[in-house]
Image 1 (cartoon, rainbow, N blue to C red):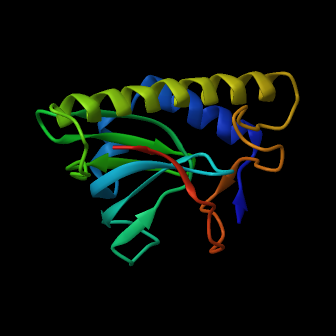
Image 2: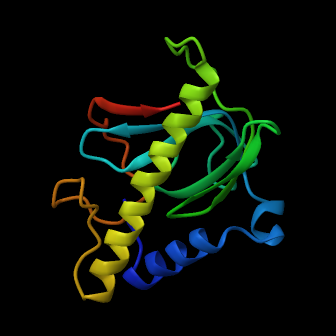
Amino acid sequence: MRHMSCEDLLSAIEQTEAGPSSGDIDGAPMIDNWFLVWRDGDAIRADGDVSGHPEISDPWVTTSPVLGFQYDFDLEAGWLRTMSRWYRLARLRAVPVASPDPQAKRREALDAAQELLTRHREAWRDQIVSGGRPVATDLPETNTAGVDGSNEPLGPVTGLFI
């Protein structure tokens, strides 16, 4: 697993909160048919069909931990920032939702993911500034700022942001 320095993580957090420039997004890989997933003992990651990735040829990807995203349901487009790079977002995966208004439930789920990601960024920033290791407050102590995780299986899905 590749690790990033605390300074690089802090920079990525600041970039996420500022949002991407056109230069960040223009050549970024695209994820289509995507969704956010939160597995036991891990940070929020995105799963989906990737194209244009400089290092991954497999069309299905699980990203490094997500720092933030923005998605427009009407345009079916947006952006996502992971610890390692920017992505362009295309269609959100049409995961079945037991609700009379599935679209509202999907929006609600993505809003909940935004809130959790905001808490993670704040916790990581506070820990870096105070000289500690960046560990998400919702995760076990062993999870640091790993990027492009190992090929070991992840734990069971504990949350799905659709």
